[in-house]
Image (cartoon, rainbow, N blue to C red; front, side):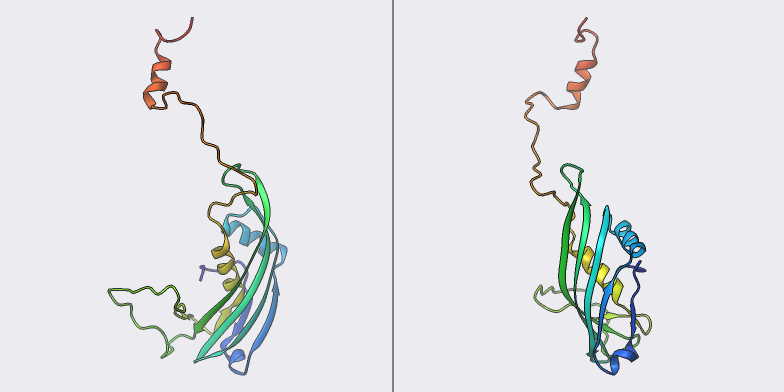
Length: 177
């Protein structure tokens, strides 16, 4: 999970152990501004999530979906543009010192892209639902966002683009009088 989340919405393991907990979260303006800064966005106009947290092993499984109206900067035109980011996610978490926690990493790792992610082992009894929403919003963002219709056009100039071409232009005998 992202370090300290700018949007903390907490449920405790003890609350989940009694049965599923449903939460609908909506980030306020201060949280949206902090999240936008953290993720390098121009703005977040809305961020809403529906989550169900249910018991899983000695921890919890978080099943959620979110939708966010965001403003990003186009990587081609440098102009701001608005879009909607949305996703569904599932995360499993375990309390500290859980016997079900993943063991020490081995030297050679085999990746199975279809396998479930290993559970997060938390440091305390708090499950930060807002933090997991922010983390999954970050995963949905295009690292090179492009405004609809924006196209990168390579320069058509066939002139010499070497660094020495600029130096030749500075020579006195090449300069126009």
